[in-house]
Length: 245
Figure 1 (tube, helix red, strand yellow):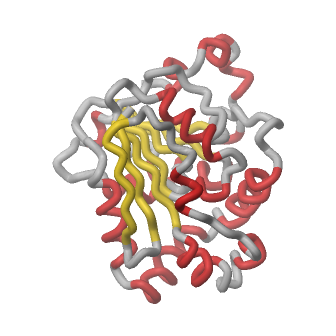
Figure 2: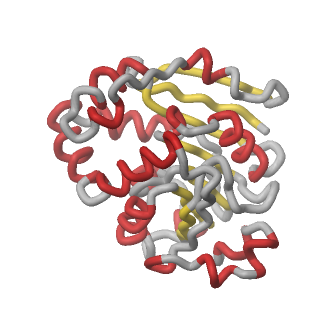
Figure 3: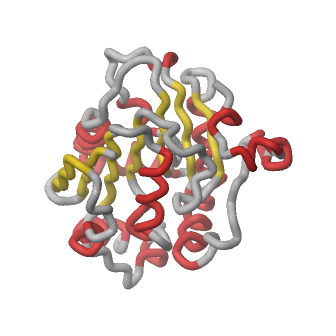
């Protein structure tokens, strides 16, 4: 299905004007391209050229197959079924799409990937357009351009730790989810940030002095969600939060 039908009416009316490079629509607002959002957008645009190589080759040398196992464990927590709509916030190069359960016919899924980095989206498009029913959108997590109550599955893996406004990004995911949808949010713990990103030649300048407190992050989750579950994964390198709208 075309992404246009999932957009708020104001974006549908003038949809053509939002078409950017590679025909990926751009809904970035100056309001949110500041601070951390701007910093990490630039980082991921730069890193997009070799991102998959570093994770696949270098990551495998350091961590073996444990990264793939963790990704599979995370994605399996979602309620997959055929013929549903899916939103992946901060899709990056789309690597997690490889871990959709094999029992699902991925071509029946209506998948939308959103990301602040146009570089990562271009890589994702090259990898997955044609293999899956995938549409892409260049936007901020705090300002999703989609209709209320639009998606059956919503998930985010990596990035929200340093969004400008974590609370509003979570509220946006909830807004665009259908009633009863399970939402998943996962990202690195402070241990992983300290031992990986702050020591890597490629990323250390972007993460110098950065701190993330999971307990503080929990306070951004609205009290009226149900089935809230928070767990640590991959030997405490990642956290995974799920809840239902």
